[in-house]
Amino acid sequence: MTWIGLLIVGLTAIAVQGEVPIVTRAEWNAKPPNGTIDSMETPLPRAVIAHTAGGACADDVTCSQHMRNLQNFQMSKQKFSDIGYHYLIGGNGKVYEGRSPSQRGAFAGPNNDGSLGIAFIGNFEKRAPNKEALDAAKELLEQAVKQAQLVEGYKLLGHRQVSATMSPGEALYALIQQWPNWSEDM
Image 1 (cartoon, helix red, strand yellow):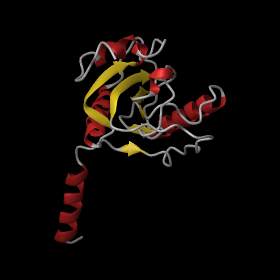
Image 2: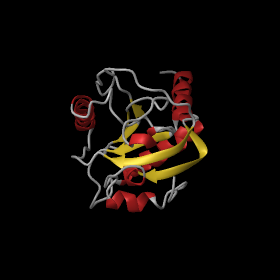
Image 3: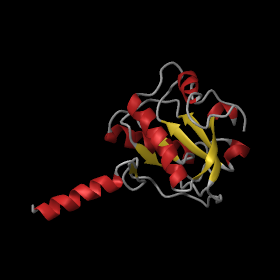
């Protein structure tokens, strides 16, 4: 490779630095939605942190399988048109694309309107997600503001604040209360 080729590769790496990589629906082999999903106008005023309350994942293959399993469960058992969350965070530190932020979520009943749903894959009642997953979520929130998915002064909430649930688990709930934009009320 010539020095010009190395320079281009180096500049490309600099250009994408600071953006959290997102595993697309195609990459985790999502099914298409089985119905229409109401749209929402972005940027949104709230980000809601949840957990899936099931098993955790630590590698690409397992996290992608968890995504497919969750989508199948939510579409077949819960009768959602698609996976309910906008983004999910794996223990491998990667962000997985759920439904579009411009589509109404299916995770918080009447509070879905105006809320960006971000769920950590796993159960975080007794233990917190690892540093890689926590860092990915924080970077995702910053990126969502830059990409006009969230308003600059958005409110950060735990799932239990907008829905009757234990989510995002006691350990994760305690952590997110220390994050920027945390709000005790909607």
